[in-house]
Length: 278
Image (cartoon, rainbow, N blue to C red):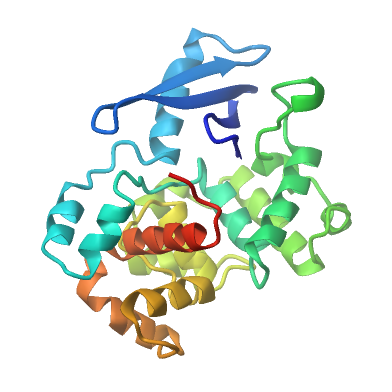
C-alpha cells in the first residue's frame, strides 16, 4: 500500500497478470467520489469489474454504517469518537491469504517492524506491475510462497517458525485444502476454530483475520495490546484492562460494533502520534 496524502496506490494480481490502481477522492465530504486509474502492461477494460470488487472490499465502500451512526448519536461515549472520524470505512485485505500472512508477520512485533518484513517479502516474491524507480509489486500469491523453503524466508528476516507457517499456509490454499468460501460462510466460533487449526495462528491472529480478512466488524481482537491501551484511554480506565476477558466485558455495551470501535481507536492513536492529518 502506498499513500502520498492525495493518491492511494496498490498493485493486485488479476487473472494471471498484475494491475496497478491509483485511487483519489474528489467531490464534497457529503458527496465524495472515488476516481480510479488502472494501469499495467496487460491491463484492459476487462479488469474493471475485478478492480471495482477489490476496492469495494479493501476500502469497505459498500458497508452500511447507518445503524452505527444512528446508535452512536445516542451514546455519550461512542458519539464523539464516531463523529471525530466520520467517514471512516472498515478496511479489509484483498485476500484471506494476505490477511493471514500480515497477522503472522506482526505477531509479537511492532507494526513498523511487521510492515518492514511484509515489504521485503513483497519486493522479492511479488509480481511487478510497474517499472523504474517507482516499481510496485503485488502481494505474493499462495502458490509462489508454497514453493519456497524456510531458508528463503529467513533471508527476508522471517523467523523459522513464521517461515514454516507462511509456506504451509500457501501450500494449503494453493492445493484447495483450506476452503476459503466455507470459512467466509462459517459462524464466528466455527471460523475461529478453523483459523486456530492453522500453523502459526493463535487467538490474536485469528480474531484479527476475522476482522481484517473476513470483514466481521463486530470482532475486537482482545489480545491486541495497543488496542487494549487505546480502549483504556477512551474509557478513562487507566491500566484496568489486564486481560482478554476484562477487555471483552468493557466492550459489551458496544459488542455489535466492536470492530468499528477498534478501527476508530486506531485512528485516535495515529492522530495522537501525528501520523493522521485532516
